[in-house]
Length: 327
Ligand code: PHE
Ligand code: CO
Image (cartoon, rainbow, N blue to C red; front, side):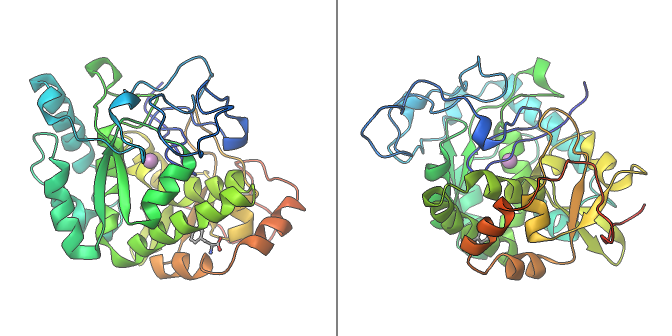
């Protein structure tokens, strides 16, 4: 298959990812680890907390090197020349596709990642990011538990997987790697409004975990942070990291005729299941980052109650009367 999906994350990674499988949170099999433990969920115990996709594959990172908050040192010495070359090729392939498909905020900030010919040092990116919006990026071994993920976002720290896919995974990798996490997610953290949304999401995630609403909240993440489109005077553009880090879905999401692109609506989006193993069947577009921030500012406690009382909507459907974008 070509390249596709990316992961969502109610959490950290929960998910799918450029390729991969993301499983709705409620369906994720647990990997033997934190289960049965008396330690708080979201505290690293040296093993990966969950597995995704088909359920027979533990996450590939080495969790023993991470601290209790799941962050670790970026193991820069361990990158080979081939790893840097993989990053360079991925970066070049995506960069040339951005004009006319990615939103201006992303294009304006992507060079803040630094030199495009090697994997950036996270500390250097963080210095620039800190000046722009007060955010930092931190290194993690891979997908982390949702509560640990929320806690980092609430603290304005975005977790970035430090390893890079193997050359044979160039088009499709089943877990988020450094290219997806960094190239896909970090440029928009330079935008104050979007960065504010991400922090609010982290705070809201900690609350959703208490309310057993992570699966609903994960759909919001999926259809905005990972696969969101934004309406601009020039037409629809992508801002979702899963799209922006995918070679094939970037054009598909913005240009392919006949794909439903529906106006953002909080409960509509929380009712909609998502695809993890192929391109999305529905995309949602916002009119501005401010709209996204404002629409998600109210307390979600009653929203979760309402959504639980409504039927789910299959991906790929436009409901009667909905504002949708035709290209
Ligand atoms: N306002 C949400 C709540 O009270 C928190 C939130 C903000 C969640 C932004 C997601 C995104 O739960
Ligand atoms: Co992602």
